[in-house]
Image (cartoon, rainbow, N blue to C red; front, side, top):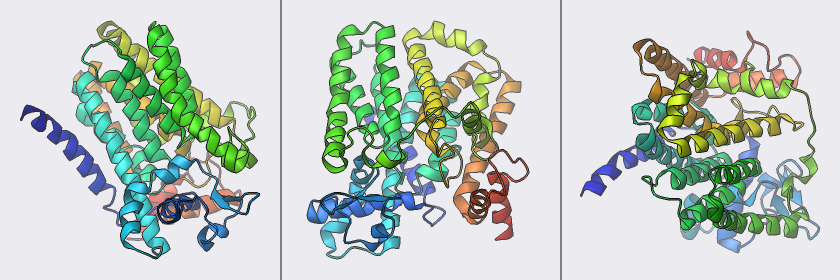
Length: 422
């Protein structure tokens, strides 16, 4: 009975998020979200990844899909994106003979994404409640509604939703131990979860590398082998898939766009603080850990192992930002905010939770509430419609605005579009 009572808040968090992500009664996607639900449908109906029979995909050859040497048209995105749509596509495919209309397929993709994101929020809630209880409510609200999880990842069949779920699952296995030693099976589960996340978003490999560094730092030598073994299963499967279909084991369908190089500090700084792509602009509550650093010492003294986990995941988030800053399309195309950094959100919001736990005086609490409220307002605004969003991106593509324009920022365009549509 006690276990059932403890599970009720987690279930309420999951169902509440799932409902909230659908209250806009629309799908907010880009063309990148197109292939995943159709590929999942093909897998259920015909056991193939081939999208040749769908004009929706055929019209986006090279941008969304790649034509292989044997004539198959395959999604260029990681296969985990398509597999993540199976929970919603499978029941429909079992009762329908024909492929549903495009609009229905996009809604099924959004439902799958919202399920994964809601699951990630539920796991986040459990972790924060166990380790930073004073921050449980504000951190969970921030994670669920004050970040790009709400305005982007939950709104369409991106790979971000399942990727963040598996990142949080790895964190859950790591931290949800009640002080017990890191068992081999847990290390295996952590590795497997990170490997599954990589099958959705390749950049998470950086987090996997830093997880191994954390194990070394904590001298968990015996646990390194199951960690590596768990990660290797989905990663090897991914590499075999990429080799077989694209003849590119590492880059897969991204082969044509896998060129990286140092672009200077400007893109990296822009991904953090620019008015139209900055993580700290779109989620200003993430500034909380930097409002005084006294909490760091308290966190380290309270639980050294947890502090190692926290700071290595943040280091991985910084590494991920540098990684995407070196890509030619660092501004991540059409997106409401820094989409490429969505997989870093668990690290940053857990850092927020730790700072919130140890910063309890009244003046700071008022600042924190204001920043969380502003963050939620920004992303709820991003869920309402895309009128201003589209206008800004058209202006950006035409060179009339940049990510650094303050008065002509994406957020201002978005809210201006909302007010004009009322």
